[in-house]
Length: 370
Image (cartoon, rainbow, N blue to C red; front, side, top):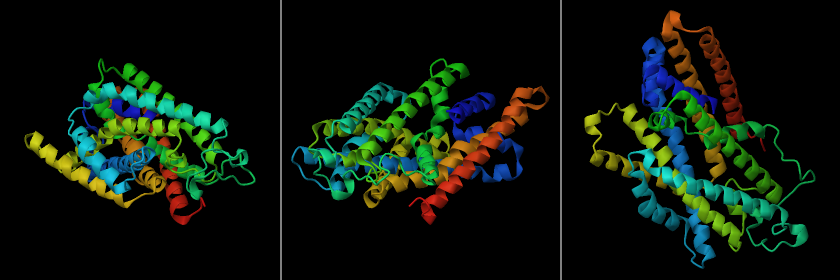
């Protein structure tokens, strides 16, 4: 949450309203290499936010397919993906302002909490326990519970770095931080900090609990999308799938708008050309590309790890650290000792983030986590 709030502070310091604008008014003013590599900022946002949308489409395709099967309708993953894209995601992605989605955030949150409760119930009631002849062991063999001799100790090791990269993507919405800050009512830094700290803390607890309940129910066969492990005949799991589908559906426009803004920034599209018609054409092209990728790829875990390691590190750690350091330097002689010290510390944190990202990539490509 620190870097998310830091981006809001940078926007206040530079009077910027977007991620790219914050870079141009902080690091970009230093000239030299920092000005030359400014194109990497929107390019990285495009990739990381785009990967987030592809991952969401993959989740929704699997979820809708499972829900249809629960009600006796056997449809292909492709059919569920295309239907949802055309009739649900496309209208939502035509949204121009994030504020119109605010009423649906509570629905998404309730869905996540309900899923957490159901996972806790299934973790302890033995429905998926082979030793108790659980009633929902009708899933594919590679999705059924499997535990080794050290069954209650998750095999982390070097995988902890891969997990960190996936967490980058799970928390990755930093490209929208300037938008959140500018659209927040009474957008003071203390209020913005409180909102972000509470949000990140609650989601961290939910993510941690879901991870624990998921692993202690399915062990080594825990799927990258945990609801795939649950039987299509499990009514509570079916309700969870519906709740998650609602949550993901109304979250989908958040990274989508970030990607769209990144493309507009990358090509320096003027305000005059950003008409509703042109934005809708761009939206249709982007959504088509994301849908095609979601149709082709099925490994959600790999998608999250690649996105977090390769691009999340840059947008979460590298760019904000450089922006803050340069913004502090631009203050000149009036800068306080506290700000100077903090600007140095963020560079240290940046190095730590880079190290985690590099190790995560090595774990993923070399196979150290197997």
